[in-house]
Image 1: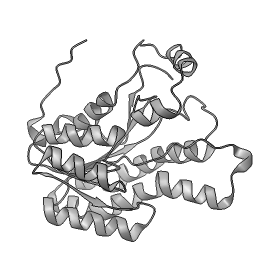
Image 2: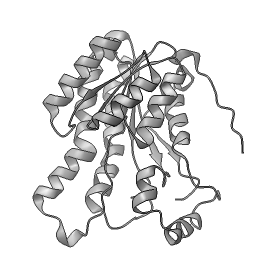
Image 3: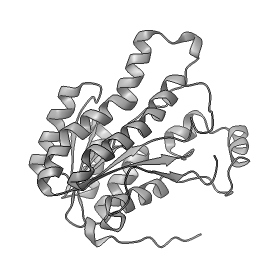
Image 4: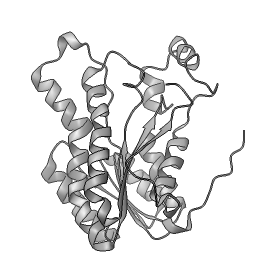
Length: 252
């Protein structure tokens, strides 16, 4: 099925920050914003993939190496990208890892590391960029959730707890920042067919089981998550805040 996607004039020239932009859904977002004429900065730990993406997309796309579990690194990287691309008025908190784990094996150290990987940096990224958005007169913050906990998915309790917390963060920050015309929303992907998912967990049986829970029969490509993010970043979504936007083919 051929798709014809929208162009959002309001995104042209806009400075965008994305966490975890070198692969998977994040890479698709970087490409999508670049196609709209935005200036795109992203952070990632993968040197080779990050540099290759910047080389491919050319001027207007930049990256900084950053371990998001280290808040000082996050602040430094975001500052460097702002110097290169201008004050960001769009932030996409995308980076996460859905590593499977048995609840019996979870230690306090592992739990804390999973929260640092999957939720803590969302808040500190917002804290880092919100002052610039306030000065600019507004902005859009998009936090990536997950429908894994809506579906009562098992085998990764630290991950699903963090992703459930994203919704609380979105709601409270939408209230705290709304007077400054900063919108905060959550995009909720279903099972998205990134290369990582295909390599690790997308067995024929697992895919068949998942299809049976979706209303739509097609597996979900990362491009559809990126398209929702573009909409929420654009002026078309000027009155959208504090809400969840599902991209899960009706699988709840």
